[in-house]
Length: 312
Image 1 (cartoon, rainbow, N blue to C red):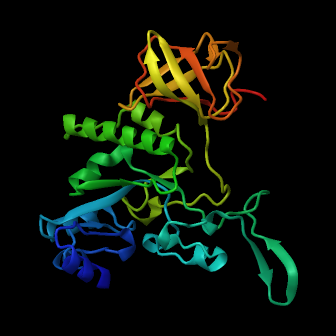
Image 2 (image 1 turned 90 degrees about the vertical axis):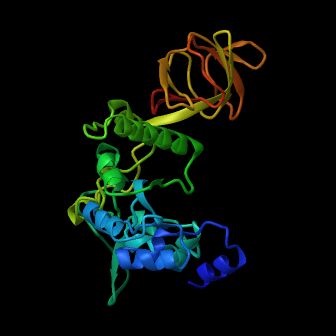
Image 3 (image 1 turned 135 degrees about the vertical axis):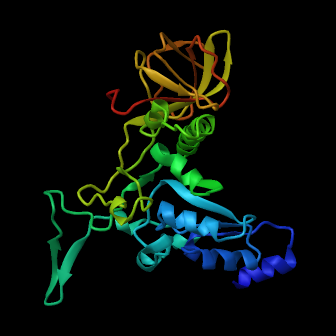
């Protein structure tokens, strides 16, 4: 509250957005933030579609509402967690969370010092605090119809590839809704794109009630089915000139994700190094290489392949 008041006094023209960590979960709190000078509030992640609609109907129309639509779900209410800071000194509230909720925990007992007990659901143990990721593309129409002005995709500490892939997918989903608001169907290519980035199992979060915010206690890692192998610096006369971001081998099938969101699948017939010499792989970090592609690939296009497609 003090920061809001000071910002309003010192920089009255600056837009003020209130974080999800403020825990705004009802229209009274949202209206109070607006009265203090907020232009936008990022709603608590624990709200349902109906909760959001009620907030929209009972707040000033000038107040913008923002809601999370994709990415990691915190096991703590609205991300207000102190586990990381307590255990590692890295503060989640400053963007440095080490995600202890994803760790595999064991139990100890007061009278048995030094002895750890497995918390077991499977042979691999149990990840007792591990929340599934949020994915709302299949019902983005309902979120927009509830009155949300801005869609928030988790991006902090994520790679440029993750940001490019997820934002392009949701842009296409929103466009599909705008083209047919009364008959929205999530495009298949959007759902396909959202499997191309590193993620945990997907859930609907709290949008349809608490039962939708699921946990995967059997596995603590990510699903990584695709990996980046390069970025296009230039394309001319059927050749893409690229910078390596991961090894791939001659003969492997690639996908090119253009800045527009368009995806092109192709298998390069040759690879050349920066000197124009034929090579059979791209093993060196950030090496320059070129490959043939009949489709024009704009600068910034990301090249990817299926994970574990190559050996060695």
